[in-house]
Image (cartoon, rainbow, N blue to C red; front, top):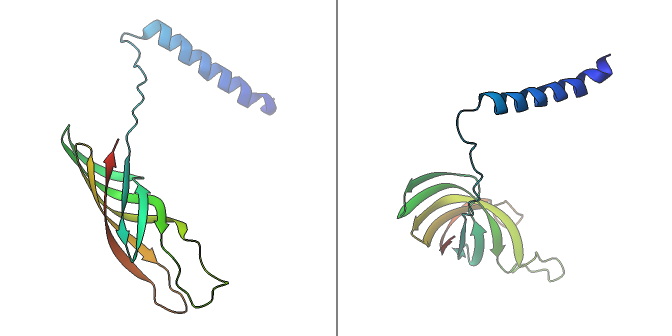
Length: 137
């Protein structure tokens, strides 16, 4: 009996949902709208470059002119590893996750990202600040 409980309950919930939608609906159904919005930024940080995108964030919008975003910045950092050992160098392009502020005016985006460089044997870990300019889709 318990084996059949889950499929039967799912069926009953779906049936009740369809009945209530058809019988008691007084408003039109909402229409799905696809909104493609994103920001891509290129900039400079810690003697290297970056290309990043806006990720999860908090956003203040004053449509249609400007917005201010505080959030995570997934992207790619571009920096040549200048270590002494030629056989053990890091890749020039590495994935990264920063955090920071982005201001957009119409389609222009200005960004101040913060990236953390982890501690290594040669230097202590520290936060680096950068600057970037980009485009809002």
